[in-house]
Image (tube, rainbow, N blue to C red; front, side, top):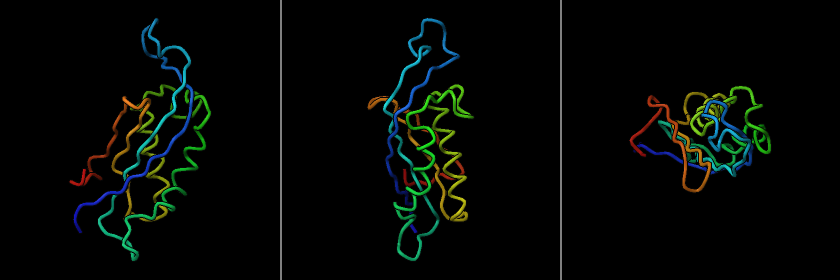
Length: 134
């Protein structure tokens, strides 16, 4: 099979502040974002239906995770006390891959993009999961 990935976008709204930026930095104060994430999924093989993973099944994995952070203060979420876009991406990548284990080792998320605004995003990837499709 040629290297292939699928992706799906999800949205959530959350507040946060960055505790380790210098005093006077605007992100030191509590503020919020309309986040958009793009989750990439890959596999070495397709299933019987010709899918890497049905988008509906991906929703069953990702949406419960999003529900734990949507309309919450991210600083209050375990593992997100310093919720930069980069660290939010790493947290989401770990949580999604943990939940994907239900499908065995066939399916994995090698990369996620976290947009704080339409112009600013962090890209987090796991090199050993990457393919040449990106």
